[in-house]
Each structure stands twice: as structure tokens, then as C-alpha cells.
Length: 193
Image (cartoon, rainbow, N blue to C red; front, side):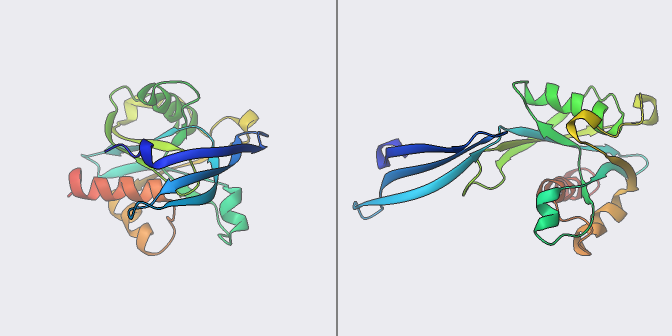
């Protein structure tokens, strides 16, 4: 169902394009009762991304990363963030980009990735769509140490964990990253369940 006939964009103003794009928009929205209402919203456009949960079914393990996430730190999370490998698409196809991210972040060349879903991560303000993938890995796929790209400010620790331990980290708040929680939940239902 299209809602295009219920929105009239009246004004868009660029607030920042320092690294990504922050805009403020004034628009009219036709409410369910037919009345038009003026609204104001800010949107942050950082592009779309992809995330991957590498798993080894036979060993019941997953590979995660641990790194600094400054916005989480200034929001009161005083630890490094444990996450699945992920990155922005930067114009690449989602499956192509996530393979490259796996090599950069965890040091594995993973060829056979499977898209399981996509989702808006914070649709109230952020335009990003995230493409979620899973892929089986084994030790023969390891081509390096990972760690990310230092020139992009990445300083990534690679964690290979038993799935049950990783899943338990959601409950005790060692894992608080939404994309990681979503992919671990998927694995609990569809891979290791």
C-alpha cells in the first residue's frame, strides 16, 4: 500500500554533510481521519549496510567482533561493543560487501552467504536499511587475522565463541547490539534450534 498521496514535502534543509547527511524536513501528513497535519522530522542518511553471522554448525560456534562504538560510550555503555561483522554498502551489492567485511574484520574468506532478512534499524530518524546474512565457516577459510582497517579507525578483536555462550550474552547485557541480537535469535530458531 503506497502512502505517497498522504505526504506533501514542503521544505527540506541540509543541516550537515560532514560525513553523512543530516536533513530537517517539513511536510504535511494526511491523517487517518483525512485532516492534514504539518510535521517536522530530522533524517540521518548514512547509507545502507549489511551484517553477517558466521557459524560452524558442527562445532556449534559463531564468530563475533569486539570494538569501540563511541555513540554507545557517550550514551553510558562503558565497554567495547560485541557485534557481528558488518559494514556500509558504499555502492556495492549487499552480498558482495559483506564478503569483503568478513575478510577485513574477521579474516575469513566466506563465499557462500545466505540473506535471511532486511530491516530498518531505527526508522524514526535513520534511513539505513540493513541486510542480514548468515554463512557457515570452517578453519580452512581463514586467510588472515582480521581486525578491520586501521585507516578507517577500526581496531577490532575477533571472538570465536560457542553459540550457547554468545546467546547467553544477550541476557547478561554483554551483547546489546540490535543487529547481533537479531542474528543470534535467528540462529537459535533456524540453525542451532
